[in-house]
Length: 208
Image (cartoon, rainbow, N blue to C red; front, side, top):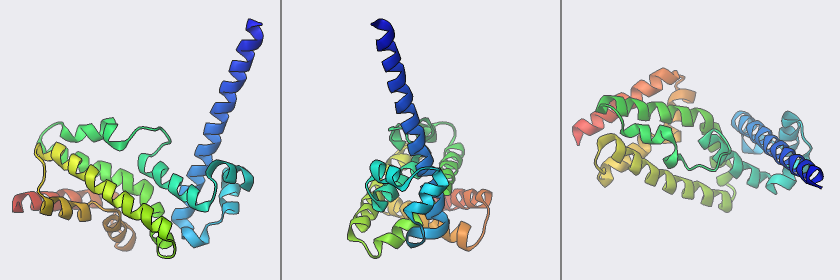
C-alpha cells in the first residue's frame, strides 16, 4: 500500500508540474504574439501553434481570448507565474538600498526590465480596450494599481513619500506609453531609455 500511495503522489506531482509548464508555455507564446501582432491580429490558434498545444487546452486554462490576455498581462509584468506581488520581490525592495543615485538607477533598470517584457501586451490591451468595456476596466484598474505601487517605490527611493504632483509626473514618466514612444517610436536603446529616466527623475527631484 505505501508503494502505491507514493506512486500516486509522484504521478500527481508530475501532472501538476507538467500543467504549470504548459501554462507558462502558452503565456510566453501569448506575450510574444500579442506584442508582435496586436489584439485583433492574434488568434488563439496561432498561440496554440506557437506553444505546441491545442486550442482546447487554452480554453480549458484561460476560458477565452480575453482571459488569456489578462493572464498574459500579469505574466509579462512579473516575468514569471509565481504568485508573488511586485512589491514583495527583492528587486522592488532594493530600490531603498544604497545612495540616492544608486536607488534612482536601480528604479530605472527595474522599470526598463518590466516594460521590456510587458509594453507589447499593454499595447494590445489598449487596442482591445478601445472596443471592449471589460478590458478597459482592466486597463483602468492596472493604471490605478501602478499609481499606488509607484508611490511606494518613490518612497523607497527618496526615503520620504512623494507629494501628489511629483507622483503624477513620475506616473507619466515611468509609464508604458512613455517607454513605447521612446523605444518603439523613437528607436532609442534600453540603455538610453534608462539614462533618460535617471536624468528626468533627477530633474524632477531638483525641481521639487
